[in-house]
Image (cartoon, one colour):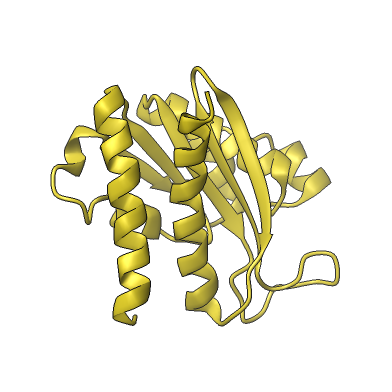
Length: 167
């Protein structure tokens, strides 16, 4: 990964970490397409154990159901890459890791797996907080697999930061 792109992730992690620390909040992560990269990004920041205790990587549909409590009917009806599923992932991780807020990701990083309705690069990110509720956003990222995943990490960190600063 080039230095500038790594700096984007680090600066986003630092800003979010500072906000979480100042507010005494702990974040949890539920990751599918990012495969643990969000947790890695958060823990790049020294002292992150004060605001990050754990995350759950749920790459398969079965793991989303078993580990996060995602209703299988949601996956059947909307697909794993959907707003309904990312909402359920975000609230599920908060309950399972006992965090105050959460970031969840689900998407199609490629190079295969895309469809006409959900092409490669389609990603849903959810950020939630016990006070402010949940915010979701759909993205269509360009680039190869790593570019899609990297952009997802940065936007996930930024989405939670935005939610926490919105009220």
